Length: 96
Picture 1 (spheres, helix red, strand yellow):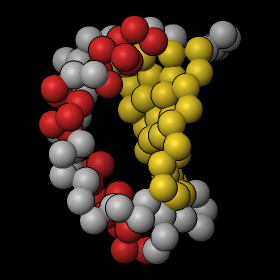
Picture 2 (picture 1 turned 135 degrees about the vertical axis):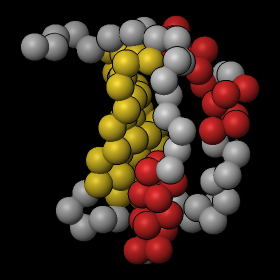
Picture 3 (picture 1 turned 45 degrees about the vertical axis):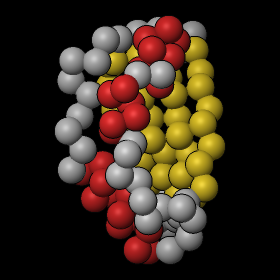
Picture 4 (picture 1 turned 180 degrees about the horizontal axis):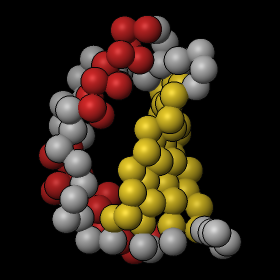
């Protein structure tokens, strides 16, 4: 299993609300090869989010990241230019 975490730092409450609304209205990832699960985590102060996706493999994740579907899903991210993003990835070694 492979996990991708996109860490988002938001500058204000309006940006945080846009992040939440954007993911709430997203069409989802059903049917994307290798996709397992999506989670959106919000910090208690609502200034940061973790966009967590679980994949069967890193290869599946890489195919998604380089796909037209990925570009399409991220096309309307205007207004979030002040949101800072950091991508980190992990291979799951133990899951119970």
